Image 1 (cartoon, one colour):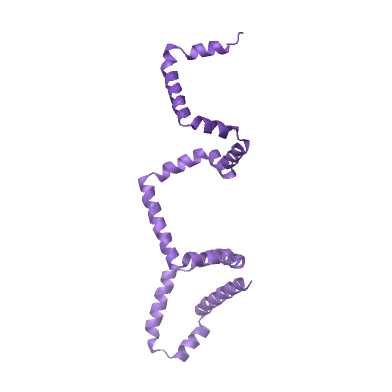
Image 2 (cartoon, helix red, strand yellow; image 1 turned 120 degrees about the horizontal axis):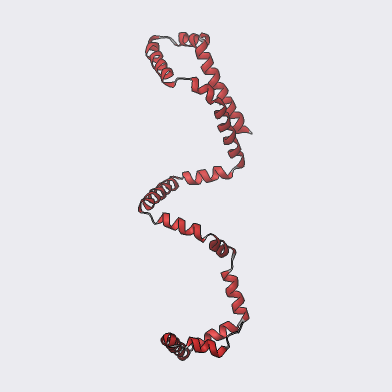
Length: 192
């Protein structure tokens, strides 16, 4: 195995095929030298402190993460360049602006930064979730119809008769007990 000498490498570079490219590179190097840029680049490359600072700036955690996730970023940019996605994001940003202008974003931020409020909301959602099987048995449309009929029929009923009915009707009692129990549960969760 023979190693190629420097002269052989130079000779292969200065072939007729490469001569035009080498000539252009030499012209560029002459012009850069005339402008003083070669001396500047040479001085910068000789300055270890400058090079250390350049590498420190280039090799920040953010830049390394950016380079590591380049494929994901390209995919994201491709999605963001889609016309339909741009329209949807524009609508979303408009909606967020409206929420912010109304003060809801600040309120939500304050609420979410309060650990006790978050815990109370989680407990409330859990208790509502536990009540869903019971609530699924309630036919709201029928309950609303019955309430409307009761109101229409009750216009001539005295308050005393209405109270008597509330105290004796087992369906009304169950509904009131459910509502009172639900409100007690919410109150307990909010006071913790």
